[in-house]
Length: 280
Image (cartoon, rainbow, N blue to C red; front, top):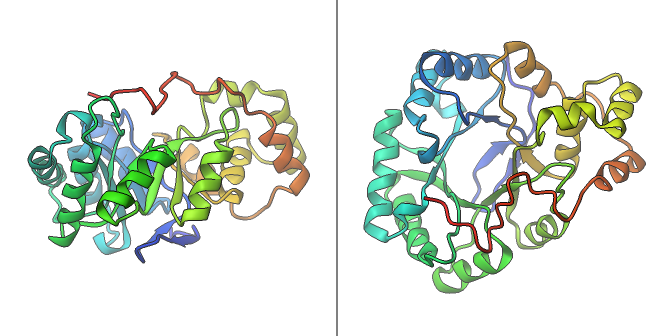
């Protein structure tokens, strides 16, 4: 299947699909098969992380498809325990060795870990790794505006993308607005929140019936219309195809507003506030 996913331009010129595939908890042979299936169904942006412990699985999945490497956009992320410059450089190299790849298209700092307060040092390592050809585009996850402002002030380089928790129950309106004003792309982790919450929500069910779509398709279309790159995960080929089939309809403005109103101040699923959360 040829991918029909639109693409967006990052601030450094790299083009990426507007919808990707998450791989959290996809491990081993089954995980590699699921990743290969996703690529065969048209996904071209694949998201992983050092701390998911599945970069090798991603690499194995790539080898099971006939899609050329240059057509794919593979992401991984630096863990919190490796924020010092030397450790960050070695971790990036280790990520490549695990996946058996020469470069990552995107490499992100997974969390700012503000108490540890070494994320600028880690960012400098990513800047240099990009210069060395190990990474094509560098970004962050879960960074607040003040974290990114500091990166730009101290290194002169803003992230190309910021991956944040984003779903209808936590829509990150102010964060998205800051991204848009500063040319940083928004990427959504856990875009469907807890799936059972999405499926059981009356508002979402009503919209799914209205548009003759599934609840997941309604939510993923909502992300797309907000300019956010969602990365849903599913090991099911049927669900993979369902999740990617969101570009043949559009939610009207009133329905977008209705979904926006589902957000809550305490909408984070695991209470992981980037202002204080420390990743290992």
